Length: 634
Ligand code: GLP
Image (cartoon, rainbow, N blue to C red; front, top):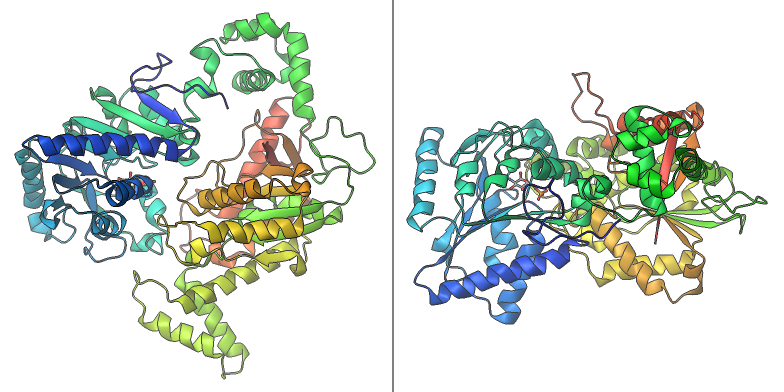
């Protein structure tokens, strides 16, 4: 990825309509935002007025809150002169509910700093319906009574919402009761143990309330936000994307990590906004995009096509089209291999994997059970057929993803299978499920039981791919066992457990995912645990002979120009893959899908593999049923 990084107001391209700051990792950005807040806090101490801070929830601000807590503890940063106003709260929801924003703010920030309780303001999720309007008005008045918000911290939802200002919110909207968008509820479903438990409504500050803040800081991490950010930053402001209204703010800044910024024109099509250096990678990106955009296979592109599509500089430098087309065609062609573990006794000069050793030790790291087969079920089958020594390691148990209904089903089955005697654990599980409220945390025992469910699903799924159970290992990393969604915290023990596995297996190949995930997601954390462990392992000999392949199981597949290894799947292989994914029973949709939309994970995964194949076909390469794809990590 190019390292075009712009600072605040100095925008590199005319396309971006707000100041944007980009860094490789969220952590690098957090320090500067915490510094800005720290400075403002200190200035307020000398002024005769408290600092009025607008705060956000969600996983995005968690690292910022951790840094503020650290500064409070280690550097004496005091919040005694700070008044806070939170953006929003679910409605109706009690402040003690584990997913309420009241509770979230206490856990993540307020309980760890010295802010007086009466200086904390969060919209109420428990006001009577007929009193909500009045409570919202009072909230606005209270903000105004302090002279307005000095700094407003924001995240962004996948619908483009800020606070809970869903699409359709007007630029002058104020604090009010809103109905949550379907996508927002889907995103919150994991936290609430199912979409049906997510409250229908929320009370949120309006877009107008946010716009009135003197300074607005929007943060976003991970690839899942990249598309909505591109629109919020580059497109005309529209009601269907409330974050785009921030373009009109005179002191706003978007702070993004590289993954969240990846869809911006300066990265996607840098030739449209400047004079990029045309290395091979960028040339391949431009040529494949041109081919797909105008619907012409690579080998049929003409000089004229390049010239008419903003690529005359490329064709002048590296043309004529005939030569450039062939070069890129060959590059793409060489990504295709039916031998993901390397083809024995073959010339591997242009193959993605080495021919030697013919039998490799392959380590597949899967953040949760199912990530592996979703992205690489077909590749796993091929590796198994190739006789490679495979180890599939599940980094976390995945127990948090098992609905109670599935646990009940499994416990009842156990009891019935034991002819009414039943194991102690199954009986305890059923007893807990009987009394457990929908927002209660699972006991350690229930989490363990749900973990067993996922273990068994994972084993049978891998068997469908031809990978026997003896190849499977479950790490149950502590960050997951001790945490909950959005609040995980990895430590040295996690890294050491993985390091031990790496050194035991000494792999020639590692398949891993999560490099562009939200840093607080299971995938994102799993990847950072992996990269730390791998770095520590670097002095070992096996590392110098190891290729690390990145796969994606989060629904956002690699694009044609990025792919470095493309493993085709025949129709039969794709059926096997579908079966392998389907065997993760607890991960199937819990609610029967009534509309036409494909929402089952196995359907979506297959669709992605078909799309990749279809794109290769459109580029003029061979026509495959489906393709799984990988990028090499360096
Ligand atoms: C919720 C909150 C928003 C937040 C968004 C994104 O909808 N109301 O304020 O920005 O989630 O959440 P996350 O940061 O977890 O991606």
